[in-house]
Amino acid sequence: MSAVKAFLIEPMAGTIRPVTINLEGSYAEIKGFVKCDMIDIVRVNGFDIIVDDNGLGDTVPCLTEVAGAPTPLAGNLLVTKSDRLGELADVTETIEAVAPLFVIVRPVLHPVIVVSERPGVIAAEIARVEIILDRSAPNIVEAAEA
Image (tube, rainbow, N blue to C red; front, side, top):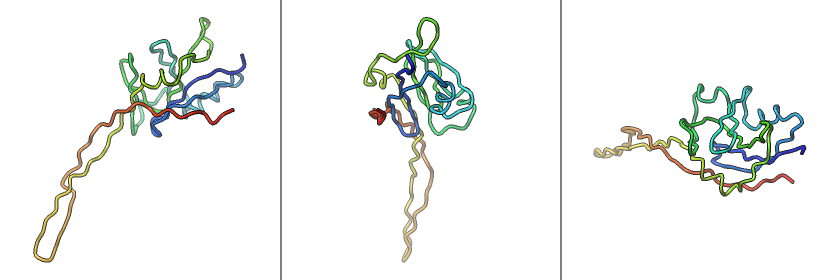
């Protein structure tokens, strides 16, 4: 087998899509998908989720919760599997079965605007900003690859 099937979750885009990892030169390709210099593998629910090793140490615009994982993950996630020898293997589950296992958590800013009216003047100002956490499963995007 020269390539394996995996899924790439891009939390900033809010998507999950199928990707192919070529086994020759796979480390560089994986770092390109995850967009980092150092990777780590989190094993959850029979999946090997490849993440940025320093992801939670950085300031992040969103996080991804994984069903069965004790902590959220940051950055792009590459969902893979491994064989009994620990080598990369195809993800055999469908993308429709995998997507609901992940929840992208993003802060949403909601400005509270106060309008004051005086004779001849209408003014509006932001009184405060409320932060709401939006939680959603990634949207499935079909591969553009051949």
